Length: 412
Image: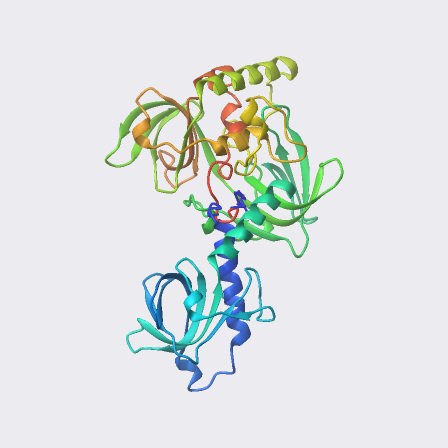
């Protein structure tokens, strides 16, 4: 879900973060549906859930989610069934020829395992085609954009199952009451993870004020309330300041954080998303922030400067921000600025220099002096100059620039 990118979200990130996780859950459900009462023979039956790496005439190589590789041999008697993503039984399954199995397809293989555990004589193969997963991922992403909201948690009422979030982009913020039901799926990011896929099922009482939250569901007409089908939350950190040192060998940089008032070592991983804001757009955003500060006083109306708000989902074509950086929000959808940022090309650590000003969303981490970047935006000096108390917290979101697996994509 979270781009939603959670759409990861939020996955990949999308990502397909949510999509791949949904496939795993669905395949696991299918596996349970096929299970028989335990017998001596059944105890020898092995199951593997994963992704096809390559195919041969009478076998497939599968990379299980648990790691390693397994060769599944296919016999004429092997049942191969194709099911749509999200199915929990075989009602809609259709036979699939072995030659239609392709790398990237998600599979559940059930059969007799070899003594060394490296191969399975497949009795049945349940398949979710990569193209079907991609289509579902796109649908999830679009649905999170249409029916998703995000913001900083300002209050939690576990007794009534209601969470209040403060949401807003460049303009004034507003409160949204997110109502949960018994069927609402709640997930939460792991403390040191930058992957939407690593979000785990979590009870409502784990959500705290100051957390970032995204929800998807049905909104009331004025958008002040939402009945949530899915929620993903996390505790993240915002960093803003000038780079004082870069170590490309270790993929780290040191930033003089103007928010925490201390230097921070920022690790850049393969999952970190680095973007550079064009100067003309940075200046336009700065002018917009100055105008808002003059009109309604940038005096506590925005989110706290120590955390980042959950703005929106990854960019899509036709965003108003592509025609100008201060464009208003697109109806009830996510802020156009978030969409614009998502469309920026990726950059790398090599593109940054000592003295560059950056805004970063990172994991909280166990060590306050060292964090891992989720998203990093450079070229932001005009923005921080215009509104140092709220710019970082209103512009960046770990789900807007990243690629959650299914908004990506947070699910297990």
